[in-house]
Length: 298
Image 1 (cartoon, one colour):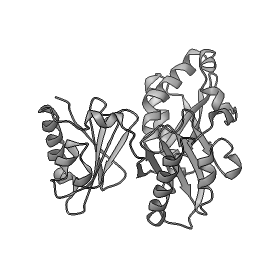
Image 2: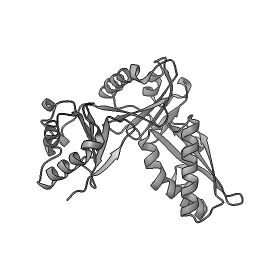
Image 3: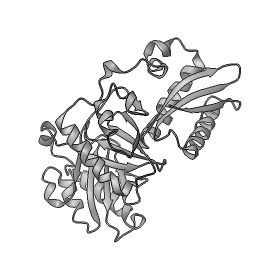
Image 4: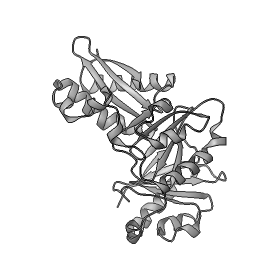
């Protein structure tokens, strides 16, 4: 049986139900009501639960947004069992024929630990190389980022993999602007595939650090640090709309320098918590209690 893991999200209305195997690759599906579930027998069944508001299917998880008539802690175990039972009986999550069709773009908004940042997840790959734009002058490689800066409340834009993290100014509240940004991003991505022109990305130090030749020339400890960051830290950071890159390791002082981007950047409490977490992990996994992590904003 495909075991379901329950994952709490930053949005109290949404819970993720993760599977051991991928449901779909490079595609997301969003179902807002039972009439939209022709391509998903599982989503159709879930909508018979009176508290289900929206069903998302992406990667290896099913995310469900509920109405406020129940609390997740009262029903999440039953929902997980229902999904497990559905799959065990041979039920289809997504009909195979739908994967060959071109799907409309969907945008899934998630809050992040940084209250100034919201993560907008798309159902398509946006870039192979992360791009961070602190202002409109840094948008040469991303026409999407440039257009986003036309909104007066947009302060910074970070694009990576299949998501866009947007930092806002305090002049606006997320409740007032999230729908507007979701609509804009959906329309933009439906009209063009050009989100980031990777040939125009400036070859910064962070860019060079990602290259294989840089890794091969590092000392063994630095390579171990990078592998730990990539395997254990980066996935969690990316799920919160951010990114982390290795900068350097000093064998004499045992100082590890990393750069934080996206939602992890610019929030003192998030930076402090993440820095301490990385520091403790590296000390334990490298058996070196003298390691110090210095986290810098991108």
